[in-house]
Every structure is written in C-alpha cells, then in structure tokens.
Length: 201
Image (cartoon, rainbow, N blue to C red; front, side, top):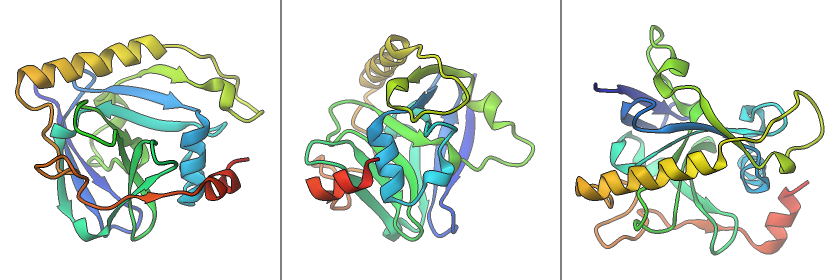
C-alpha cells in the first residue's frame, strides 16, 4: 500500500522539500532527548519547536524518499563536532529539517517532524504512525511530564532493516543531499569545542 507524500517547509517558506511514500512501513516515529539534539536546537534558535523536556520529534526514514523542491540555495548544514551528525537546516530562518550521517554508506535520515506540512485534511499522526521509541531520557532536563525510556533497540533494528531494503532496491546511496561522489552538496559549519560548550546547559 502506497504511503502519503508530505511537503516539508521551513518557518519562513523560502525552503521546501517533499518526503514521498510516508507511512509507518517506510519510517519510524521517535522522540529523542539527547544532549546533542538539544544543543543543535539551541544553536539554531529552535528550542520553541522541542517537545516538553527538550525532546526532538523525529521521523526516521531513508534519503531516497526526499526531493528538494524550492529554495535549495538556502539549505545549510551544521555539525556539532568534526565527527557529528550532519544536521541540515534552512539557513534563511534556521529551521531544522533533516539529520544524516556524514556519508552515504548507511541509508538513514531523520526528518524534523515540525517541518512536515501535510494538507489540512491529512492527519500527520496517522501518516507517520505512533511513537515507537523514546530515547536518551537521562539527558532530559528536570520537569514534567514524566518520561519512560523504551524502543531503542527496535528503532535501531528498523534503521538497519530499511538500509538492507534500500540496498536490495539499489537505492541505498540515493540522496539529494550528497553528490555522485558522496560529498555533501553544501559545506557544513562545524562548531568549535567552545561554541558547542556554550550552547549546552
């Protein structure tokens, strides 16, 4: 059964993309409370888009489902360290968009759920499915609601299963975010240790 095509938009509307064939079969809905996700949100001024207790709402899928449709010149990339994830965002308004590895060896992409902009009649929660994992709760700041950690292994298994499926389909290295040689289409900004520490609380 085919999934739903979901537009992705930055806050100001200058950058747009399309995530194709979205469904609980083609991706996993997770909440991540890790310090790195919190730090990246602070650097980009996106703390207001975090869940309670500084959680990031993320949909794991593969880059082959992504198409850049508008304002590619605004696409930018942030790395918290030289070995950190590639955190892609819209530089026009600093909206987080995607996260990938620094290479195309693993067919993995985390999509920032607040950037998803389905048609009004489409219920996003049904399209991306229920949350299957809440991870790194030990990094969450004190407060409410209470958090229960679960699903880390399940989410990891789903990432590997989607990678194997992409390999079998010949789509494991298909991505609009890297060129044919496997280099990112924009040069990432890598935070210094001092910048990273300043953004941590």
